[in-house]
Amino acid sequence: MLHSINLLRTLSCYAIAIFHIRAFVHSHSDTVHLTFSAAPGFHLFLAISGFILVYITRPDDTPLNFMMKRTVRIVPLYWAATTLTLLLALARPWLFHEADTSLSSIVSSYLFLPHYDLGGDIQPILFVGWTLGYIMLFYLLFSLSLFVPERVQVPAAILMTIGVIAGAQLLPAGPYREFYGNPILLEFAMGCIMGLALRQKAVQEFVKRTSMWPIGLIGIAGFAIAMNTTLPSWGRMGVYAVSSALVVFACAGQDLFRKPLNNDFLSMGGKISYGIFLIHPLLMTAFGVTLFRLTSNDWVATILLFATVLPLTSFLAYLSFRYFETPTNTWLRKAFHLSKLPPKSVQGKAATMRPTVV
Image (cartoon, rainbow, N blue to C red; front, side, top):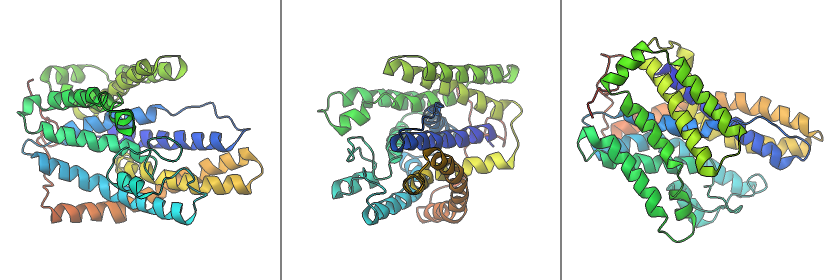
């Protein structure tokens, strides 16, 4: 089990939730100014997603089989959360005042297509869904890479990603050019590169002989640099991408080739992380708007918002994983005859990455 990666994935989703709560507070209060930042959460989330793609790929996966397996994992909970957000936006528009409930927005939201909301941002009805738009695009590119020989699949996916970013610059100004031309896609590629590196025997031997802590700490130091220095947007994104890749490499290397963390709590944290990611916006908006309307002291409202949203999100994410995501995923896999067999291992039965000479 990738317990360190599960811990990292859990922390990244909580960081994203904290980032959003902080932004919500700043948009609703003139007196509360929170100086901390949780920006690395997004970048880690994308890099982890890229690594996981390499980690879970089976040698006998077909493009359609791979894409279907990822779709049945991602879509059901996202569609359920989007539907609930849409219903609330229609019934209580003051809660989601920037949500565009037009037909074009609804269709775009369910199909992971870029669309401007009423505030001029590229966000679906459930605003965190913009990240899933990138994830689904990268899933598609990675599934297409399965048409080529195994040894060049990851490089092919990375080249296609660069091609999408470059090709988007040829589109007319609008949401598609802005969305698909964003170099943030390269953060997925960095995660894939870390997965590819850990397939190499020389890298595996290096990891076995070398402590992963310094590598992880260098990545964390990179986050601090990106958050506390003035850099151009490309430069800051580059620092975040490299830093995220180093942290992912350190955690994955520790799990696969050194003494892994062995904790069921960490394993469960990884399982509910997707629920944390999708559920917190609903709770944040509902509780946040209510608290700032009912409470005259913005600091009290802020403290109550953090104190209620984070634990309640965790609880609901657990219920979602156990009673919605797991049974839905199991049923859809059976319905579409999708294999549940694990990939081949690099270390017997303990890991699921394969050594490949590239």
